[in-house]
Length: 128
Image (cartoon, rainbow, N blue to C red; front, side):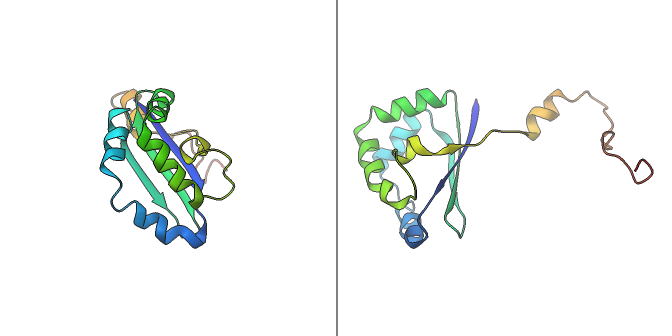
């Protein structure tokens, strides 16, 4: 399963309305997201308009292509586009994808049993 985190910038003067639009997303949009592989999907909005999205999917490109084939996505993206700053593409294509650099469960799964949990790579005061 691919974990995807992305950002967009919501116009600060439209943040309240943007949040309100997401209180009850259209049921056909919700079904389309689910049916095309967007799972565990969340959006987080910071007070300065930074929008952070997170989802899990078997294949992001396939999930995006699946949504692009739906009528509801075209309608939703057209309505949402006006909420974002500096966006030349529809929001579902114009987001900045972040690179994952750490995932706790992945590291725990690969850690050797009985590995000392003390930080062996971090210098102590004596080492400095």
